[in-house]
Image 1 (cartoon, helix red, strand yellow):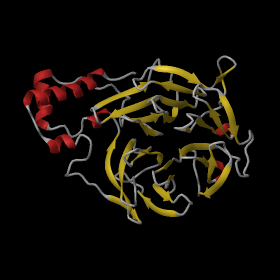
Image 2 (spheres, one colour):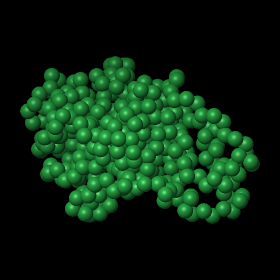
Image 3 (cartoon, helix red, strand yellow):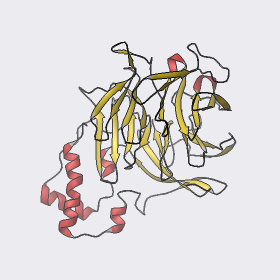
Image 4 (tube, one colour):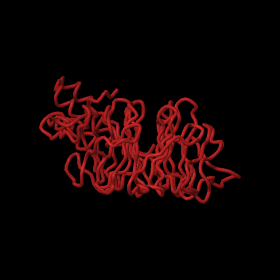
Length: 356
């Protein structure tokens, strides 16, 4: 895993300095994993008791250490010297997809930089995968399995790259006939926790491809030239799994199709003006979250497809967006949204509405 060693050392010495000085500043330390009390936390939407509340935004390594008590920061410089300057390119440029693992590390693809940014607010560390000389070219989609292995779709290579949680490269998936990639340009990816099957959107081929954990092709949904009938696609771009449901954003047909795990059509939800960048996520109550790139907001639907509410609007302030793309909801009902043109990720917390 490529990382900025000086930055990680700076984060680690914060813990050493806390121990050495015996500082107990619970309020300030808590601000490392949330906004400080003085920063705005606007409630962005409500419906039937549920609302999403803005928590934080982050865009690069500096944000991992944001909120460090000034006395600790100064003490680190006295004891250890000033941290080295950070190299260019670590701040996010065009964040696309986002996901979290069981340790609550946050992974963000940045195709324009060829990087996957990794933010660990639990341990105050930042690192990244990719960069000069790495295997990654244009990382787009993300998925994480039960062992916290990371699966990254690379739209230029036409492959899926698999990494251990430590960042060690494991293997490529999607090669057939030697080095020939099976995919034209893989995008969205999801893993079923029960079968461990991998579902991958391949927009140029208008298909969703099904693989096993070893990368063997088990089948595909849709047809090569695309179509508009149930179970057919035109540029499927994003995918999410909840229980026995597979949700596929059928961007070219302006709809969200719901399939079973074998690819059989169940139903669809019509959605206006979908883009290839539009993101989706499903919460624990099977509410559906879809990026609205026309209004720069997140639209929330019931499982049946009824519109419930919307949060966000165009802007740079906390809780606002400028092209919200990837969406992820973690086990603690936190929502992460890649705010592409604002070059950041925004985090919200779901409250009320029977969330779990």
